[in-house]
Image: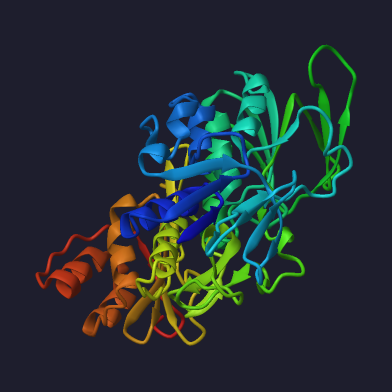
Length: 434
């Protein structure tokens, strides 16, 4: 059997290793689109603030790891696919035949149509090469404009802040991390950043980037839709990503936002599977396909897809939409249906002064979503209650009245022994209970 894995991120590497563990005799080829050892993009911020070197980003640290596992590693970009003849065509010429193919091609950063976005000193922060260029400019005291305050942008913000850069963050949405945090949580995060000396502009667009031509090095001026501007030695684009699926045009692989797959992560083309950031896997909270572009999901996809490719039927139950973000010491997190279920109920704890927030979402007697800011002790409990879909029984009503009893509820429902510890935070009851 000849397996080809297109993409050498967490999904692809996990898949190649899983294939080898299941099929000792198979021919396995792992194809990377970059001339680097397989690495984690989520480790790049740690490289930027100096806590690791480049080798610290590598997904596997042992020399000769892929050769020792009988995995052929090669670089190249896919230009097309013939699913009838089972061939993958490469952009530089040549082709790779396969019996079964996994597409784990990941995603690429979006470059907004901003005048000056192609100037020297303007970079995305997605690849190791991006990181090398950023490190040339992001010195202590360097003026940096970060375009985008979503999840990825906020991770980059943390790294640049740690390097001592003078930061201006520009976000088109009305709050930071709008796809992860509600208005209370997002605004709380924004106030935290400003208290740390970061200029935060929400509801704002970058209108242009211009080179002033003054002095040595990159001297840029960044204009904003509110009429103001900021000087910069470096502009970092973190305005989102899109799936790498362009090479599938004209193929039998059905693509919407990402690649559509069934419960076994098979695409609409025979013997072709998909995993990771290019794939519309199932969100366990909704039961519907969605783009859950986080590393744990990519790893899960890679393992399950590989098992199915090797003939070990393993349905994908779905992944939990979960994000945890550390922004200059303030931990924020969201789980499941954090925006709430259509006919559900909500309760909140808010402590604006101390940057603490807890929101719980219920549907029937199950917890289906949650958000936290500044409350790290609750992360494991919330994940457990939401992912396992435990019925809370009487604890649903108790939590709606007193969400500070979360720990007691978790112990009582999941472990069967009550425990209580109030927080003293202000309780905001849902309208029906007020």
